[in-house]
Image (cartoon, rainbow, N blue to C red):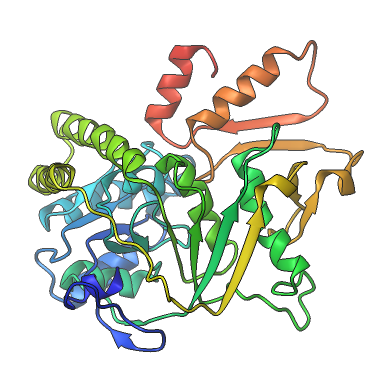
Length: 370
């Protein structure tokens, strides 16, 4: 994938520790670093983006803006649109929930948020300076990281959810000595490496993001997930509809959105997906048998590496519950609603719910969940 982004001949990749400058097809900027990215774009004398699609979000400051944030909300959208970028609006929702729906398969990107982890293709999150450089020049300097392979096998057992599979990765790594919870002398095989996940090819792209997004908690440099063609085709068709809606609603730059729609439609006409070389070598291989995951796996508070089976923490008092953030999709709220419908009386905990996008909120209200 990186080899293709570097313009190498078909079938040639980039080996670990090799310096390269791959094309960044999709670039995301978020609002807490957006003003810095804007200043750095000015320093680069950028009057128009070279990256195919640059998107600006306002998900971190929209709910409780400070006076300086209000100024940013009014000035930054035009700055992005005037250079051919796509600007969301304050209150639209989380950057990843939108940026993921603008992606092209087997392409690379970057973003100014550590959780910029694509469900299709691959991203290398960066700071405001590199995001500005990638947007302006269309490339990003990269020392190619090593990879860690995580391969699932077997069949998912009743009562087990995708979140349990997310947590199964650090749990299995702990069992094999690849990861430690203790901070002193900490071991983390994933740190600075690409997490390559196989064995779950029929996941939807929304589900794949739940896995790839968690690679940020592993301190991985990036993540790729091998999916079948069908869920990607379904995802792109839905995304084309959304992008056409954005143009109709006055989002800009309309030419950039239309160009991305055309490239999605072109891929659907001739769909092709890259696969790992059969003789690929990895820094480590972790194999997880789904038949052996028979109870939920959780992470203890304040440390996403501290994965434990439910039986290990059973009976622990819970005071507060939060369902939201970039780790959620609309299905989580529907599932929570069905569970709450079976509960009678006052909840014994304090429950917070925050749908990730304006669209999800509207749909959940319409369905009677929110």
